[in-house]
Image (cartoon, rainbow, N blue to C red; front, side, top):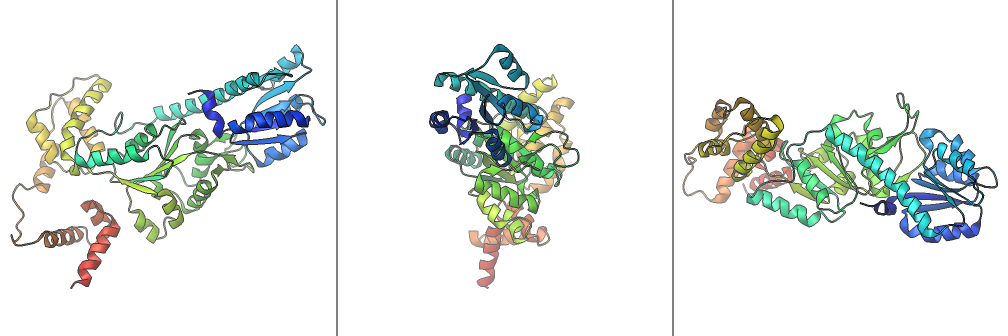
Length: 452
């Protein structure tokens, strides 16, 4: 990716006391930047910087009220934006001083437009690389449930793959639902990979961040914004600019933070904690949850308006017990990957072993399967005792003892009511066990009640 790909999401402030130069630079640069402002004095420039965030400053050295270099040098380190100085009166000493106070580049007037754009590209490329390095360092601290994209050939997973391929190139918000361990982050990564968005994929587990810190984590903060904020820090929205922000366990987000997230979605601007500056962002938001979000909204734990903004499209991931035909493929994949990672020999799976694994219910889904495969490799054998109890308890090869004249509708009603009773009347838990939404379960129960 070139630096030019970053330009449409960047913001620039041009500071020059010559109106003709302002018009020339504005005309040349405005199509290439998301936001462009101009100022004729440093006082005007500072007033703009108090309200708005700028990724880049393009500043003339000689200005009516002060030297541009002196102004930049006086700014606090954490409030500085990248800066390119322009002047028609430079000497070697001035250029060295400008670079010492943190200038990204120094160009002489008159200059060709290509020369200026080259300096801008270099500056924003360094900024992009710094953000990518942050994302990569963050990624190395996390272990994902699998490597690569979603695997499987079963009808259930192929339907999910088809939906992802269709919606990935769009900017629409997507909510991924499913039990824990079904691979929601992998689905989100596939959405980003197929989206052709040039920015990074940045994940955040909303339930793993303290409620008082999540705003700073998402939007960043300025120095002194709160106790312990000894220096400014960019937030995850900034690092995901031009890319995808994945908010896992979105139902765990505090209500106060939900209101702020809704504002960002509507305005496409963020404001770091403690700052008066707003910063434009271009971020696609993908969320995930294992909870019944309609129940969360009904109970008042999640804002209805935010739910509808995040839930443009829902992708439900099937449980592993709904796709037993994929277990052999996943077992071989995990075995090959983990054996290399552990430095041990991969196990030769027997057909009987794979059949036993396919009959198991896998309550922890793909995550449990991966952990199980790792345990097998460490032991050098298949620990059958770990599967036996659940296999015999949850799977019966005999046909259910029901009258042969029952219709499918009667059988469905009988089964749903039995599952509801087994879950002590908890409709949300019963719906998850059945693999349907709480709304669908409520509708069926209401229909049966009205027919009696």
